[in-house]
Image 1 (cartoon, rainbow, N blue to C red):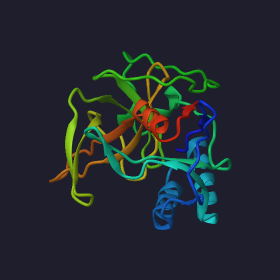
Image 2 (cartoon, one colour; image 1 turned 180 degrees about the vertical axis):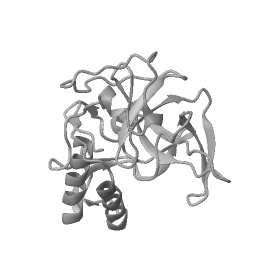
Image 3 (cartoon, rainbow, N blue to C red; image 1 turned 180 degrees about the horizontal axis):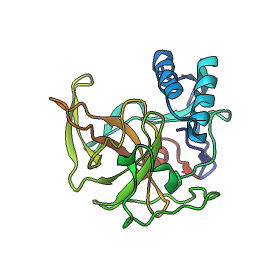
Image 4 (cartoon, one colour; image 1 turned 45 degrees about the vertical axis):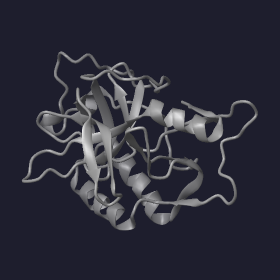
Length: 236
């Protein structure tokens, strides 16, 4: 899910990359084609139709826009950063949390009645917030649709073999299903108060089966990095 953000330069600076701007490649074509096959097997919901339209556009266009600013894959403190700010006016839509009705299919995704979450149909996410361990959070991703989970009370130490680094990351876990799976990276994560708290960036690969856990980057960490690199900030 692409996120609509506004760059807010401070002190006269602009959010840009020195030198030549690079085009951001779309999602891997093979990944997009596989997702399209899965969507064709799904029921004809409005969300599925929207995802088909977005994927069709991606497959038809090799570039989704120009990279304005990016972190590269690196560590800040004990956590990993891997984000990019892309000028892509043709791919994003309004920042909306999924309606409660989206948490119906499959039945394991249903929100328990005791969780108070009822966004208005026209509500758009306007606030960025920090999170508390144990918070209930939701996301709508390209692979798994609308899911909910809780922020784990402990960070996970992860060994990124392909990068040769270790980091401590915030984890979202669900009871009977996977909060996210490959293809959901970049999905916005909100709390039940409809505030943006982060972006999904990875899922684990459990040994011997079991459910994947998802890892997210707190948006405040991305905001701080944007300020560090450019002197500007992001707003919704």
